[in-house]
Image 1 (cartoon, rainbow, N blue to C red):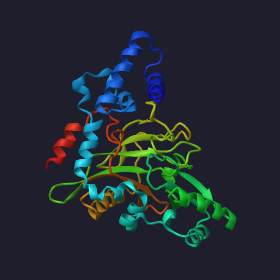
Image 2: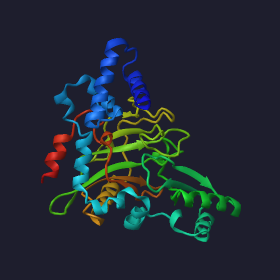
Image 3: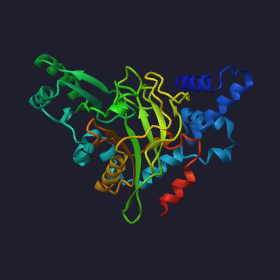
Length: 324
């Protein structure tokens, strides 16, 4: 409970500074009810401005327990691991990921050492976590460094990946992270892949290694017009602050045209066809320095913030779209 109150306090102070007394207590109870009973995280409560909406207005948003149930009903349970577990994802989608990797928990030291020789500096991520939790960049320039890294990563079941060099336009926002696109695909009842009409650009912060919105990475997320690949609004972070320019680099966000957008959309549709029993997946896609779109990973339960940053609820849209 104390951790939840800390999250409430952080969000309330960023969105409603100076709120005190009975009004703050009433807001605390209201947001606790949304979280405990309906499964709406306190971050979503504030980011979607539930404190300004009545019950009917809140229910127009895709969030909470009913959204997770919808995702779970769309995606065949036997296929969940292909998006949730990094090693299974590599096995399934390797042709679209287009970079070197090694699943450390599944190989011996010699194979891991060969990977570090090819890539002395590389990216690691836990096989079974999301939101950028546990992601780091390691350097192994010697046998002793590689051995130390191997025994740690093997025990904790990490995946090691070749670092991706991103295109110059995205690197200008923030060079310490790979800045990615979130594009959601869905497969209709006839097996035809489509793209959800709202996407997102994710931008990392200086000194971080992942661009994730949550997980302590403080990343920014901004809406993208799926038709043209243009950033259609301000960016926000998980505390609800809004940005028209990147707070570290100063590069303008609104109106930014994403390079190679047609390749990004084509890749998302191609990924959706590999395992159509996963009917709705949020794909994280990078654009390389040679302007090639590559798949970073998939998310069986794409975060609702990635498509509702315009503060327009998408629950009915989801219902209508998926009934086709």
